[in-house]
Image (cartoon, rainbow, N blue to C red; front, side, top):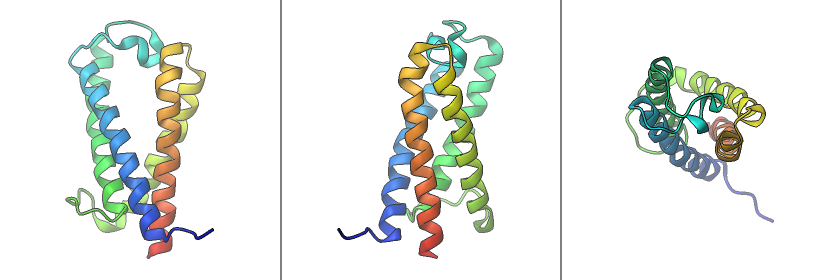
Amino acid sequence: MRQLPPRLIARYSSGLAAVLLTGLVGFQIALAVGAPWGRAAYGGATERPTARMRVSSAVASVIWALIAVVTLNRGGHRVPSVVPGRAVPVVMWIAVGLLAVGSVLNVITPSRLERMIWAPVTLVLLVSTTATELAARRRH
């Protein structure tokens, strides 16, 4: 079986990550404006996010949006550069670390809904961002 070139792996995996990150950003924005989706976030502690949760979601939405753009950039897509070139691999590994922690937290959360929705999403994001970074390194 023929192996895909690193350039294509980076491109496809970064595209998948960007799609999922866009969904995550939308979810975080909805929480930030008060959508009653708290059962699917923050351990499912409350249906309506508290003021602190809303602020946290607003900050998270900005961070994940930036990570989506950096991931697309690292995958070879033509997007605006939001961090200096040397920082891109560092940001990618930070994203991988955040997603690794997020994957564990979403698997062990007491919220069944959060486990069902976000555990698979964060696991796929973890794999796709890692694949993007590793393929981009091989490409260069």
